[in-house]
Image (cartoon, rainbow, N blue to C red; front, side, top):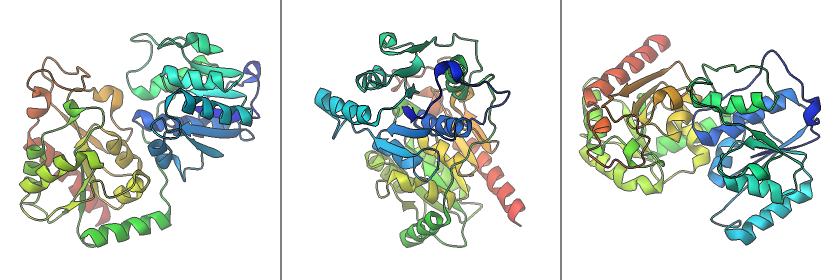
Length: 362
């Protein structure tokens, strides 16, 4: 949710021929990029971003809002009393407008209870009565397939932009200080200064259906290392520890695991010190693309036309059985969309990107 003070009235919102919007693939990043667009359009407004703690961690340092407000539904804001407490905190700030990028009923309820006079969002998930500007959800075929246009269309239908500009590349800023800290973290974990670094993202919080099997990741690494002595660095949350251990157990030679050992806030800087990302369709994939890494993205039950990272430096590796894309969190049959993706195909894509990086640097 993006909240603002010092906002023009709905009738006074200007239209322009172009829009500085940027979209970072992966839903948790949309708020930051929309806020950047709003900041460019309304430089005098006070912009606050309400986000879950792990999302707010990514937003920090991007200079796209005046304030980050943490919404912790499993902690301080758990249950009805916690949400009421949050609504009261927002009410005290006397916001003029709430832009609801989430589709959730919860977001609209909190904005309504906070007494924010203008509440803009898609009319879905049973929340229409809580919105003051009810935006119809785009019908199939009305907008381009990629997710970035779903959120841009929200702004267009609200009257805040005139057209749907698409982006070919989106960035996350990483300060030099954070880069230095990340470099020291990697060196302390066993990385080599002179070696290429391959980041592996084998998890996906959406569900197991999006995950390439651990033994395939290990096979890919072993094939890749026949041609280069790259450091292999595993990234992920503590919940992905078993997957990480399975991959490490199948790799011939050393690997470095940062799984469960670093905060999400450190992820952009750590990835920026690598040369290539190989992984599933996940948030880490989008962060890697946004800090400039070439990405080899392994897709299965989801559709890269809708959620591929917004970067020209991406190769999607995908097999498409009849049932893909199904968008299920867990495969009810044999997971064929992922098990038919061959390590050889992933290795070929990775070698092409690393070869390009060597040519560019050399």
